[in-house]
Amino acid sequence: MGTFDVIIMLAGGLLIIAGLVLFVSGKRETGKNNVEAFGIKVDVSNPSILLIALGVILLLVPRLLPDNSSDSSVNTTGEQTLGNNAHPGTVIRNQTVHSQAAEATAAEKPTPPSLPAPAAILLPSGHYELISYQENGIFANGIEGVMAMQPSGNNAVNWTAQLGGYNDFGQMMVYQYAGYIQKRGGNWVMMITGSTEPTYINQGETPLQLSLTEDEMTMQYQYLGSLITLAWEKTD
Image (cartoon, rainbow, N blue to C red):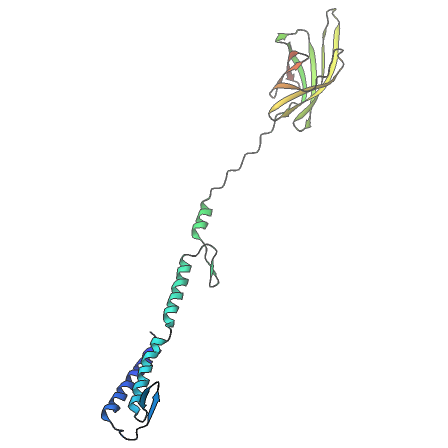
């Protein structure tokens, strides 16, 4: 109930008291002037009746009017509740509500470790000299050879080689070879693309077992049904 309602009710109470006083004192008893409304006769010449009626109306006015203070309280409470339960990003009266929990979570989120750069593949290059030759696990004596290797990109190396040895008649036979090796998905392949050897046959790519250090290299592969193992020493 507001201050204005209290004032109206006090005024109504005073009017009722004043009307009762006039009614009891009976200062004005003559000149009756009655008005009939809804079957009720009212003596309008006596001001005490009017004062009492007006006072009663004033007392009832605050109760008949809507309670604005209650609505205001409800709205204020609702806005407060909305403010307390607002989700991150909700705008209330031009103010953005930020979630401190979300900011804390973002701050505590660990940074994924950076992956190390892939290790560079060691590729054979330069010149090599043959130090041993095996065919199906049997060493062949008297065979000499040299090889030149040149990386060509995509983990591939082009090579040329020269192998020589004595035949059954004591004649020195020297043959030229050319081809490439390449590492694919962790495995090596080898191909002999050409040769001056009379029995040479292009058998395509074949798996290669390659063991490589800074000073030595071992190659093992199948050629025409035979397991060939070559050991090389780097010369430059």
